[in-house]
Length: 258
Image 1 (tube, rainbow, N blue to C red):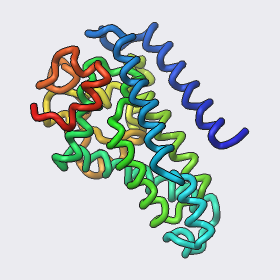
Image 2: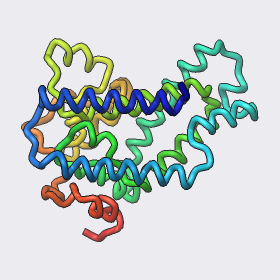
Image 3: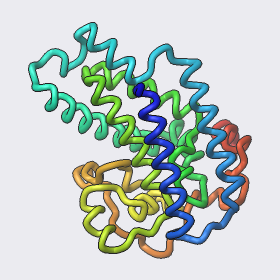
Image 4: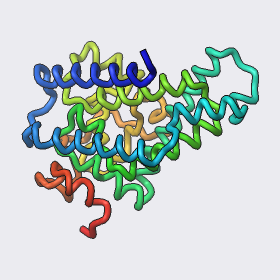
């Protein structure tokens, strides 16, 4: 099985699993119909994928292979056991995605793009895929630069990309985990309950819990919030309507004066 087939299989498997769990064990009642939101969110996925394929001759995995053949990057210049290089690369890539996420919140021009993701008022598995195409392009450029500078092994990049996609679907899912799972799991991973705080309409809560996989970076860099201050309202305070569930709204929102 090819790398692309493996990634697609895991992606679809996690998406189907979390979609099923949302149906039977929802954490919150929906405020919008699932069908209209999913059409928009998956429409963005299709456009994002086409944009990446059209604009980039190589993506992060290809960049890792190129850096390896050229001997570029920190990990290609030092002697480490292969397993250690892979593990270190995955950890560093995860930390760098944390900082990318922080940047998309703190830099106004990037926030205009990222707010498309946060405007979703019904957080579920599809929300983990809801990103503006320009944000996806910037993110891919960033990942390519990091991968080449780091000299990340190809296997590490594949593992990282799989973890990133799977964790994004998981922690956006509208699933209520039993307390006996939630409490120990959140000591290590970003759970759906923790990530919902990040999607609060309260700005000081939105600017916390930036991690996608492990919770360590938020704790180390002091952006961790364990509980919301009150009952959660999701989305953005200025967009508490059905408009963000439309595809055209989602594509044009960063370029409009509100």
